[in-house]
Image 1 (spheres, one colour):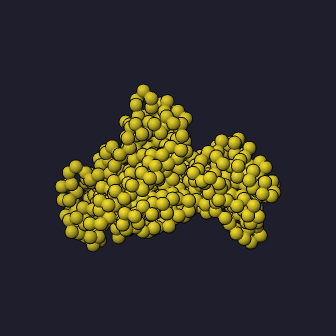
Image 2 (cartoon, helix red, strand yellow; image 1 turned 60 degrees about the horizontal axis):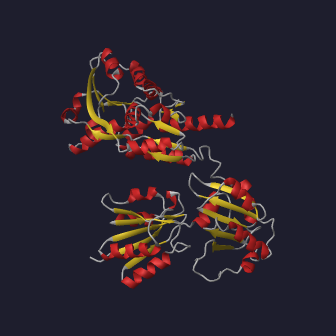
Image 3 (tube, rainbow, N blue to C red; image 1 turned 90 degrees about the vertical axis):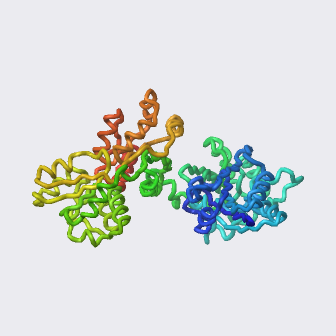
Length: 509
């Protein structure tokens, strides 16, 4: 079997900017070779058995030299592997993609190039700087800020660059900024020409510093800006003041830990990210089927004996329908049952499986479900309640007091998730975590078991705690944590709104 290399532009940092073809190539690879500037989030598209090799280069520290990377690609593809080479930005915009392909051509190895969004375009866009504008710039020039050190003289025509009248974009030029500024001024560019540097563009760590040719070096030094940065010089920089959008989002710059199970975390991560937060996924729980599914299977086989089917979580819905379909049934067998859901998210999950909820209480907790049943005559009726191991007993107890026969059957369980104790403690020790979110009591309990007991209070002393509702907040309190944020609506949307309000109040103060 002959190997092949996909040279993929991974984009500038925001994982959402990778192309669909890029994702497909990552998923097809048996080996993924990735750079420092390629978002680690993209590795989730790789096959579980794929070999992941980091070859990042930053600030003069090279995991592997360019020659070593070239040899690695030839070796892996030569052994018959499909290799995805992830490069930050676009492979052919100062990405040395041409050099890597030359080596593949010499070795007779097949390759494809998948273009990516270059940071030269994306970073200014996320900073609110359009590279061209009818009133300010009719052309744009991309320039390396770090030429090959082996060259005896520069290939750049500084007088021509200074005289374009358009926008100049320098990549990898932070260390050479004073020289770039001097060369442009010596070539006749006005010292009042607007300039900007964008560090970590398109990510939650983005930092933009503006000025003019005469002030930008001092401004950058005072801000402590270091690579990686994009330098933009031109009149279009003046538009940033009214066009910036990315850095003005309500949670921009906040680093928030998400403790949900990985397969459920995407909704919360996506919403927080849209608000500007940098999310750190630490799945402290994992959802698995109950140890014994015989009772659930028997209940499904005898489903017609029940009058009500009640779900108290999305996980409960998924677990029930997994077994329903496994046993060869579909929603037709549920036709005569009345149904209840603890909240809108659970009701939506029921709808996805073709089942509408007859009861959805206004407040999303077990007590509210009980109140919603007050208008129902359930005396003598049979209620099936598939739920998690260790769930609160309020609902079955109160429904039983109303005269109902409740079959509470365990359909799923939560176990310790994949988050590593050392990694979690290291994140908190770094002081870079602003908030930890909890979406259930089990996330609180499992989170705390991962922290050294003697250090837990200290590690969280400067970190805000957000709970999806009062039950989760109470569990946190029992474990020595005070919830700074408690959602009024016990949903992901409600939690995100509460977090946004919390930081809005802090900013206002």
